[in-house]
View 1: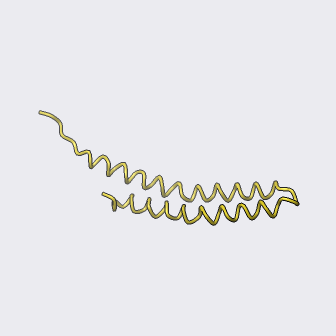
View 2: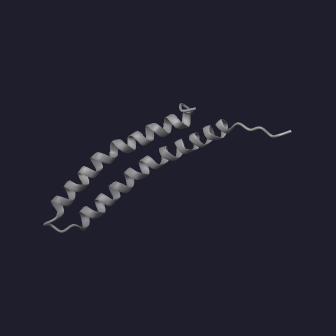
Length: 83
């Protein structure tokens, strides 16, 4: 009489879809950060350029492993490891 559905199946589908989103977003974040670093370093004056370079090297060194972790998490989620 009542239509029964499995909530767990819908959640697994959402997890797999979001895994692909994470895998797509990780390289996009890195590319965006590299673009912003290039843009800010190029626009910096000669006196502030060394400080700006140091800031962006630190930012890239911190966020690159985070984005690699996003990609790994997304690959596991898209394979259904978290079901």
